[in-house]
Length: 157
Image 1: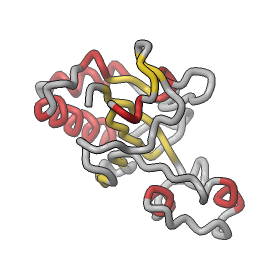
Image 2: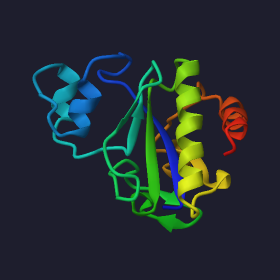
Image 3: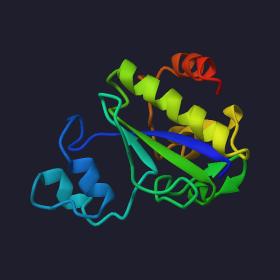
Image 4: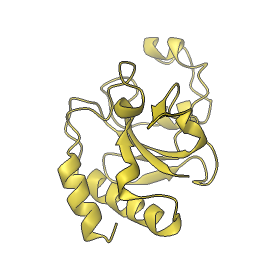
């Protein structure tokens, strides 16, 4: 792995809490539980990890294995980012501030990943919008890159 991609997700869109994200990432999302789910329940997607609003982390895919989080994507001319990236989802939206607990957990997780995987670097941390411009907008303007960078540096990352 040589890239970390930061995403955001909420299910249904704009709503937080519950197990809908877990159900999507484990292919058990019921199409009739919400009108929005009818159009996405068939998707086979999963990030490596999800950071909830309270900072708790759920891992869905081992970090050394491929996860289906990036879709059609390119980073510095290299296509199919799923092949070489770690995807971390933040429970949230592009327009609602992420929580302090999320930033703390994200910095701790990324610092641990940087320490464990020599192929990763601080320079290769990006947003989904940067690898899929025009198609994706997350983590969006509500993500505070400077805050995340400061917290990561404080943790040795």
